[in-house]
Length: 234
Image 1 (cartoon, helix red, strand yellow):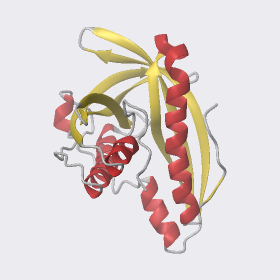
Image 2 (cartoon, one colour):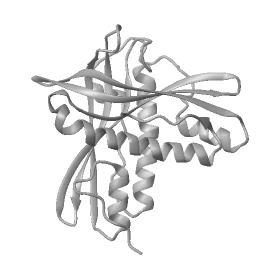
Image 3 (cartoon, rainbow, N blue to C red):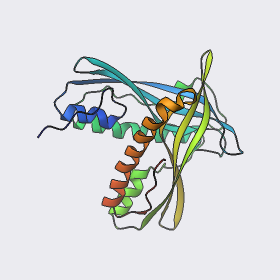
Image 4 (cartoon, rainbow, N blue to C red):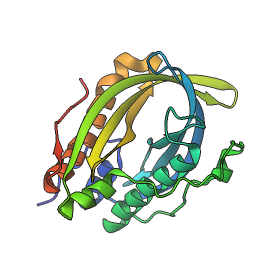
């Protein structure tokens, strides 16, 4: 039985896959944005760089476009270093490429690079060792290791800086405190965002997108026997 097509336009990689699996013709291409963003986080404001991919194309001849946040990085200790953020973003990006290709949606594989940023950082070439993503801990759990996750969700106000103008945004951020093999690591994910000036029009929809992404992740936690407590944006 064919799957029911999601509402047009798509907002997620999952929507593209659902359209394709329901028999639609789906074309997609990706472009990158790396934006300087001022985060007003609690009492500790800081500037970071947000790694975004913009997906565009058409579904049965109807054009669509949406963007997805893959990581944020900064040259201080308030979030992952920019060098780490590049690696984190590329790992999640490659996973999405694999999902698209698996269902038959061709896409040109491009990756983030530090050179794309057109800005120099202190310690850019500093060695940080391997970067663990959430799915690395899922693999450890599948191998029989105890993994537990504490989840915190926040609406974080920020200002994106484009050439010639600024854009006030609200980011729906999830922080995962993951304990495994006697150590606790902290991984953050941006699950959605919307313009501050359009909060009434877009908050509900973006909250639903963030919660759907959380549901998919929680299903993976369940399958891997990860200990966690479900939390959703409200």
